[in-house]
Image (cartoon, rainbow over all chains, first blue to last red; front, side, top):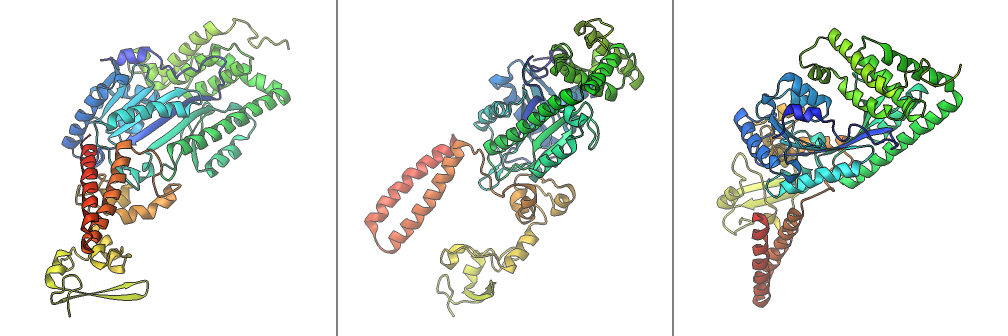
Length: 363
Length: 171
């Protein structure tokens, strides 16, 4: 069995997209909600019933060849910090982190598959792939679903499809989403209309970090809302098409900005580089926003290409729980801000040329 | 007056109004009871009783549905719980609260019927079940009309399909 520390030592294979690959879309995720036909949903089940479901499911999940040598723990065995780390890695949901006995997390070695037992539903199968690969993520999750359905009697209705604790997930039980980095649409004030357009197509969009409509790091998540009345293929196809369109708008906005507002773009990227290279105290919010500019710089060829992968890792590793895990102890906000700044400086130091003018431009 | 179902003396009279059309049924005590009409949970008139035609929902049906849907018999979850938290207690709640759920679905989803993935074995099981239902109806008809040769063939087909059904259900 994989220990928590081992899981954390290795970054997931989807965390950093391959260099040179199109990079507006960071990751694609698909999750399937499934329930046992004969048991009450986790939110209504008694503790004993929840435990029984957890025991029977967890054993079956661990036995899947895909989950060999993976991570498998009951949530009550993890401390609050460990749970928070898993949330920041998107391996468990916020809702599941609040649960204890009777809830379990089973993750494969590569961290591409995360199976949640007794979250809102008895089972949630989640697959994560880098870049825009929704179909590939679905195939991964679907394979697990098919292996399990031979042994488990899933709650299924001929008219309503898969039955879920909340009717919003009914039918396919599938929620597919992609995480997008949209700095140029934000800088050129086009993000509002784009988000509105996505909403009109019946898809949900929200900032990945930050509360409400605020988005930190210009990172957005687009997902399907409807799960009933369309097949998985139809949902994935429509979602992929819209995400592809948004990625193209972002590319166009980048070209336009570079052509028409080059100095402004250089200034933003330069200031972000300066701050992250030399700051000693930095909040999560400030870090995310500057890292976003660095990533844009790497994509535009203004900064060295390897910075992109470093930014993608730092997006996650400078989150509060990851920082505390790295420090090996609980840290208050002030101490985290200091550690965050130092971690970012270390990473940038190795990737940026030690020039006074890191942009390589003569003024 | 004779019972619509068995020709005994009718003592229970049931009136149904459907789309402005008035229909009267007369049943004997035994038939009425076996159909649950005299029990408080009753009024679940099976379609077979009235010539195999499905009965449209009557105000009585709706009243009954509303009454039934106050608590799930499988898990004890109540309609009020659902209205408060928006989630259900167990998979059977989808039957128990089907009226309330059907009402909400159009605003939640693109459609109201699942068109996505369905496990292969289950698809075949559903097809088999529907085919078996047809065959049973044909068999009844053949027997009723004393076409015994045809009935025997139908009986064989049914036996074969029922074997397959058993195989699927246990696999």
